[in-house]
Image (cartoon, rainbow, N blue to C red; front, side):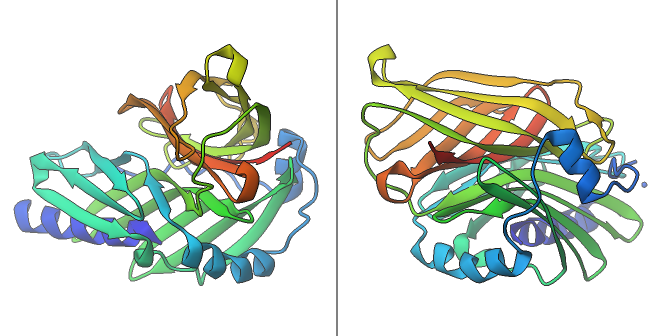
Amino acid sequence: MRLKVVLAGVCAILLASCGGGGGSGSGPDISSAEIRSLTGAGVPVETPAAQRARSPGIVSRADSLIVSTIYGETSHSALPTFRLGSQCTGTQCTISEPRIGYSETIRLSDFEVSTGSTTAVGTKHGVTLMSWTEQDMGASYTTFGAWMSHSGFAVEYAQATEQEIRIGLRSGVAGGNLTGTQVTGSATWLGVMVGTPATGSGRGDRLQGDAALNYDIGAGGGIDVAFSSIKNIDRGIAHSTPTVLFVDIPITSRGTFEAGFVGNRIQGGFYGPGHAEAAGVFEQSNIVGAFGARRQ
């Protein structure tokens, strides 16, 4: 996945400039059935193979890639925590951190289909969430999200140890084939959000909640986004912040929306014919993540 590119670059810079804690908040094992009971999701209506087979077509048609701020930490005292800023245009994003001299342009073509273990977790509001795990060259990657019909979204967590320096990265990612026009009338999209604590205790734990996007042209032309009933599915408990809100976010003529700043921002768009899907990334209340929803 994309974080392989970023993780390799950060590791190289650290090893060149620094001659050990970081780590995941990985909780106890919890079954997919327990996650469904916790979140109110139903049994998966899709298999991992079905989403994997659909993903190349979505990527081939995609004209949008969105990556959140990437939150990281290391076990080296010179750089205990850091944030990689992300500026995205079309299907590429520039990731940078001036303090460590890191800058990388990542493209949709950098994405890979995971060859690791994939589990269908559950289905809610017509979106079937998948959890991918992979080990590669001493690094571990966890991706939690979904491929819909015209777009995809996920929260990603990567960690590695290089010469006794531990490094962890977390971010949200989304993209697909934009509708390319302004939304008209009134509409609602329902789906799911996925995330992880950006910093502190529990970082790397998977979070899941409901996503609702509401647009009413008569109410000023902005979209309201609510993520609710947020649960920590790795701990089997409600998350400390149960609800995240973004209110009256303007929509561009291309059917995209963006507002806020690092730590409190949202960016997304509408995908497929008739604005069939909404997807994007967000950061708020120390959660970084992504979301996907279908028009009702």
